[in-house]
Length: 314
Ligand code: XIL
Image: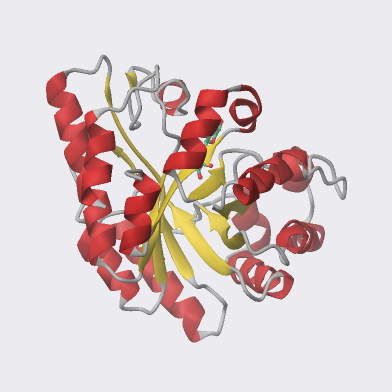
């Protein structure tokens, strides 16, 4: 039928959405759209460290398993998000000394990736998330402070060992266009691969805003593709200052269209995931006061111009 996922499949791409476990459990309209329109899902929070290992070696896969079960039931893929991040990571991790922190990271990756390694629906992971500062330096996170840059290579090696078949990604925001941060990412990926560190994929989060202009996404995707890595758009949303109006909706639709068209144009771009689908549930208003309306369905599950833009670009 005439769904986003049918169009994406015809292009050989995935179209994904982030999903929240409470809405998956409680809302049939949410479930229906998530299942019918999207071929891939990402857990919005359920696979993060604070959810999966809230205290040391006490793993909780209830939310993660719920997301995987939904994908299995609906013939979808799951993109694993995320293993090593400075945010949503318990303080017990942050307070470890260097050797213990490295071991905890390796154990976490072995257990979380290992749980799904034999499951054909989950074949990609964001191994490290948001490791750069805006100027292209490595982020001065607790990981970096304790372990230096070696934690990045160690994380990829641990993930490869836990699932030799999964595509392993480095993921970040404000790396959609060519700029200092994306160039640092490009240089790191090239250097890691030259050292045989298993980096397969680059994730461009793509949290865009209409007031900041549209980045040169296709040119940037192409330079990563030319390194031989897979590229994916992992967390697309396009926020605006609220309230919506027709002019802003039209601009937003153009942004969505241009991101999807860039991915269609770059053969190593495997697909586009939107960070949710309905404005009823989006991280944007909580994180950027005064901004919102960033997704492709309105708060009542009505299709917006941005929905049509994605549909027609696929
Ligand atoms: C956000 C979720 O959407 C929120 O529900 C949560 O409170 C905070 O995290 N970059 C990422 C995502 O990699 O994991 C973030 O998700 C959004 C920014």
